[in-house]
Image 1: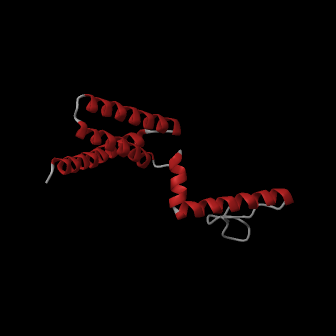
Image 2 (image 1 turned 120 degrees about the horizontal axis):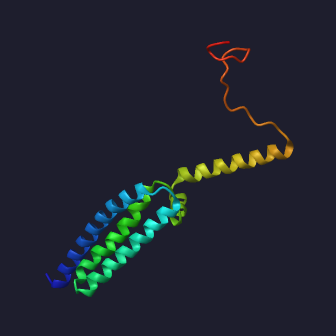
Length: 144
């Protein structure tokens, strides 16, 4: 077995370890984000911190550890998305593309918007979606 193969295997192990560590850190940070602006700032911090780590590793000559930094950035960005829990930015496109339930929900919302616009244009009343009365007089269970 040559040194090149061993270095490749160790580099891949460092990359996987970086992804796992980055994912956990990103997941925790994403859960603390309260808005899209904080989420965007957390992504920027993750990329900049990973870039700084990558530069330091390469400056000291530990090239194999550079894959850890690369994996940590990738894991942190993915972890931030999972921790935040909402689709924002480019993830929104990916979620819509890959999730049939999201596409169905979007189609249903669009259908409801078109129906509401049609009702507003024709003056038709809104449909009654729920009734809380139990008797003919319209009183609830307790009666009045």
